[in-house]
Length: 444
Image (cartoon, one colour):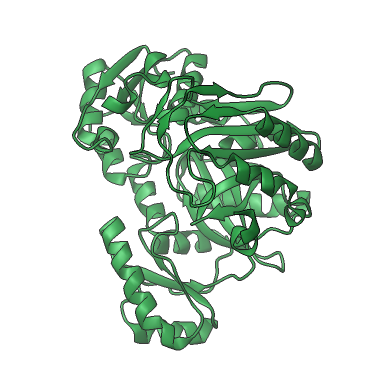
């Protein structure tokens, strides 16, 4: 096991990683910007390395500074968490050059999976179901229209190097193509420095289902699925699991493990799918890192995923077999974002009062506390509230109680929206698609 690990992140995930490292007997180091100098992850670390920059984001995005910090303090490994440098192949390559272990997959695997066209091709070859679409980048309206005619409207144009829904354009008829293609290429170029796009069949009435995978570079196992269809602007708000039958879970689970093994994956990964109204699955992408919603899986399987990912990175082979993974009960996670619950505008500010619930089946992952100054320059996630119940109905009841006992004074949050969702008839009846919030505007 590593003796000292540098955390290159902030907020609740930095604190979550810190706890896992301590449980494994590692010294905890963290690099931080000015805005986080008094944060809990920094205060609870063994070693804190300040990296004050004019642009707050650069404190976490300047990977040469991160590598310099790791070398200075003698850290054997770097944990990127999610966001920031977690999927930056150039950063991982530099770690490899400096003989610093990156807690995650190799730079080659990240490069492969970061290219949506190449990832789609690799997963199709491994036996995963993919939607019909282009196997090469599309640069002309003529080519895009030809593919659309072959696979049938509606189609969706996506950025090859993209994520988070940035640039995606849905096309319902031929005369919409030119404008949609230009918009997607422009936004892809601006966001990712890569204007390549591809066309794919648009899955109407789809649900978003993802599988949690752990692999050691040779063998992979899965920990079941999470249901993540309640989103706004392609950003998840509420996640839960399990969602599928045992038979479907076993079938798709075996395929995602084959996909991970085919590319020599090492670490935690999430395989994301769209599921249509007929129950068919279509591969979306692989997120090569720990996910915000990993907590749901931890609650229903009883395994510490973050610690398992660190163990694999340290060179330990998988000691678990697929039959060791059992799912029990139901878990729900609500993301408590510091945002206006109507306009979803960020709501930075100081927490003058802060109280989170405790009790049976309740877990709160947060870096918030009374007096905490929520900055406006970073992601608005303030806390993750997770509950476990023997049934989905029990979990919903527990979450409603937990939300009602939460006190956050000084910032607006999306808690009122979560409360409405948990009482909404379609949500209770599992009639949920990725257009859920658009189909229920009264919730907002």
